[in-house]
Length: 210
Image 1 (cartoon, one colour):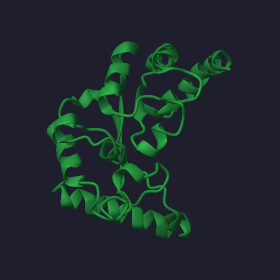
Image 2: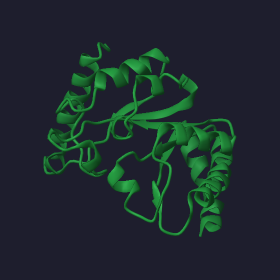
Image 3: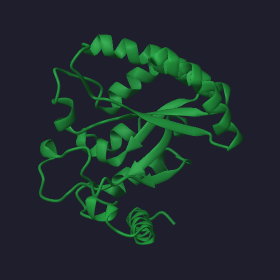
């Protein structure tokens, strides 16, 4: 299945190139019922290397997102990558250019990471960035991946620390909201877009980003 899909990737990458797309991203599933950690690591390194090389040929940088919630990585027999440091190890193993991290404030928070972790990165190490907030009143080890709030909605995630770190490393790429939020989905499209834009601007204001 992977080999058949890989054959189609060059044509997709050509379309992205014509559209001016320079950054793409995907997530890394944080568990497996079938593969041990090492088996899974080797498979990811092999397959993602092949994908990254195709994308690189068309001027695209591939970002890899780790999934931080404990409720995800304990849900199967074998936990897999769910922290920034593990993701960096995978990037080294893949070993191609135009490769980086897809950072997400929700996963950063769930992984129990700090500004110091983010400051180990360079601008070129970060492909894209998502910002969100976590539901209030839920212990960190009980948070789930697909239930989030708009950026700076609850104050659970220290968004100023997160964004300050990006400023500190000179990050110059896109930042977007990624709330998996039932109330937002129920809104008319224009209203949801306005609420999301307001939340992003609020987060930027807290961090002093103009």
